Image 1 (cartoon, rainbow, N blue to C red):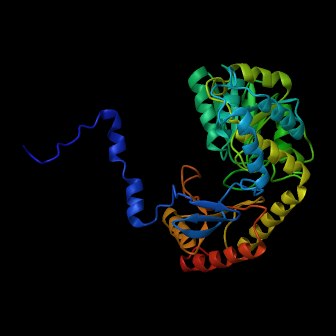
Image 2 (tube, rainbow, N blue to C red; image 1 turned 180 degrees about the vertical axis):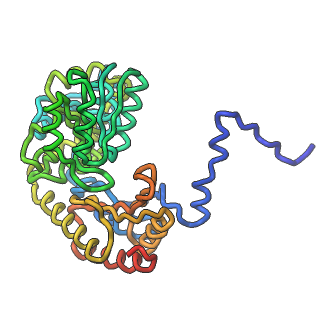
Image 3 (tube, rainbow, N blue to C red; image 1 turned 90 degrees about the vertical axis):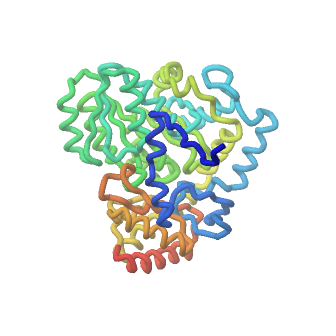
Length: 408
């Protein structure tokens, strides 16, 4: 009998998987930055490979993911409700906790009603695909989050005759050109992030509202990186512009400022009731677990009662934007705690990531397709619990390593 192992037959549909070598090449080069297992998370520090690193790449904007009050809230409901709802919201998966949170969220964002999903990603898939129908048009900022684009793909796959239009980032002239070409009485949904997840800038929502009203369009606003981040009391982009009526439909995740996981959509009661009864990602997914609901509710309470967290976060954003600019980094149009260090070259981006990682700083390298080609960047993001001395040290290290690589 031969000891030679027979070559495994690879089925045609799986050939692409076995041919994929990009990740292995990056691993061999020592520049592979993804899927780093975190062993412990403690405030502004994380521990990877038994090393302590400063976390400067988390969306835990208000530092609530490790807040003992959220942990206590999550633990307190498990005894009564268990660890899972074991069903969808449509069937046996709606708890009184869901409905209590929805009432509180609707009040917080100034809408009549809200509806919770199991993730923020599902919220966009479920709400956008529910609202759009055959013959409708969706008009999307080119820098919108990938979950919005996936919602478009789901919608067009299910309903076919839905037309996608994309306008240049925050470009109101191009948005109006698109709206002009669409029949006035056709269904039109303008979709935009409030705070853009890679650029860290804010949608020109007042101008979008004016155009939407002029051309009979509705506005869907993704507030994933805005609630708890901008506005005097953390109520997001509408509060930032001083008008709670700027969006017709608003969504947010719980995995950022709320220190949990899940998401919600808020709008007029009739809109929410419609979404509730036709949204496939809601109907065919298990609902948000009790512990996560309780954590999100506690986070909302803290956001409403501790505005100093939001003000501190906003002050940190100014400090880091100005700090990086002063040492020569290109931060683009950033105006929030999401501060990109735009490099452009993929290899230099990975090398800079590795330099920072080896110096004890955790950040996120981002390349196409998450950003446009030739716009690769290091995405830095901050928490209200960061100390000034930690941030000053990061700026010093970034300057030293950036100069070594010729980035600045």
